[in-house]
Image (cartoon, rainbow, N blue to C red):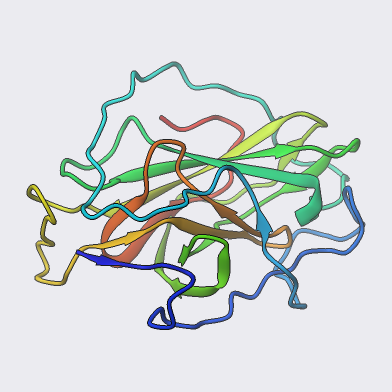
Length: 222
């Protein structure tokens, strides 16, 4: 299995375009793609080491969908990068296999103002603390995108579904490519910056550097 660490020069260096607005809180502006380049917002606990094999799959107990943000969006401004805190966990519903399969990324509005999130994210695999040393994944958007209004303290979600690793030990990919393990992912939302997240219980093991993504939703995916 191939591993990616942000401190090693062998990682593919592709700069993630991130539209992080400079002011804290929600800034004026409509929902749309970023036009500037900013820094990546680190979010969640980032693992300090890369395991020697794909992480074992746990089967978390699924729960009823949780709704936190209100939709559709109104006249609120787009959430800035600094107004959001992002975390990630392995999804309960995921493809069969021994890799990560799928992950749910949660965005919490930590500002004092209601703001909007909208659209499908872009995703890149990255090493610990090195969002600039990343490998952009091929993204397949699923579902329609609609504005989601997120109140202060409210949350919104996206789900990432990877091409699953098969087999034990280092595993294998059905396509014949080698499985890859990333300590973190850089998830970028349209108009709301890029956020580096780590799983709360492992690393991201996947095949083919391809991911299917949902649009931002007010209901937590399972």
